[in-house]
Image 1 (cartoon, helix red, strand yellow):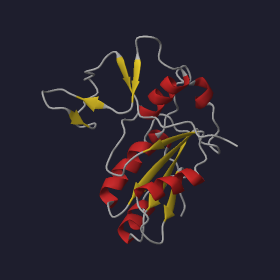
Image 2 (cartoon, one colour; image 1 turned 90 degrees about the horizontal axis):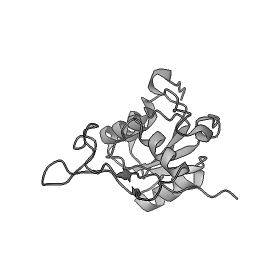
Image 3 (cartoon, helix red, strand yellow; image 1 turned 45 degrees about the horizontal axis):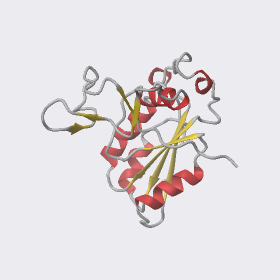
Image 4 (cartoon, helix red, strand yellow; image 1 turned 45 degrees about the vertical axis):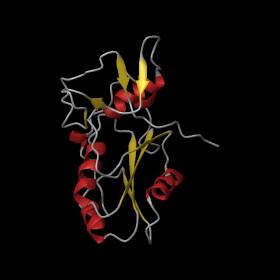
Length: 183
């Protein structure tokens, strides 16, 4: 499959925020994003597009299709980006096995997991890597997900959390995964 990169979707990261990571060569991505999926092509396309549209371009997206799924394969074939890698299990093995398979083939120094029914805000990785490489100081915290409570009922996801709303201004909200150990 011939894949091309649309530079309009991937402006570079701000080197003032994460200078070491911004210089990571494209051949060795700084971040590997692993997305397990099965039989949810429309949701998956939204998830993958949200990763490919990150302001931090030094990444690879590893989609692990957990079993035969022609609709998902056809949907992924419509995406032309060299950062996208697709692995297909011959038979269903479950989400945990799919994540493990993705991790086994990941090239990035950092690994992030994304469910196929979630999407990321465009600056998610850039902001998280800035925090991960410059840990919060005293009085600040690092949480594991973005939660937005704009009403009496907590809501999750970008639709529930407009960019102008930050209900927790003193807390960094971050879901970057662990640093991948290198042998």
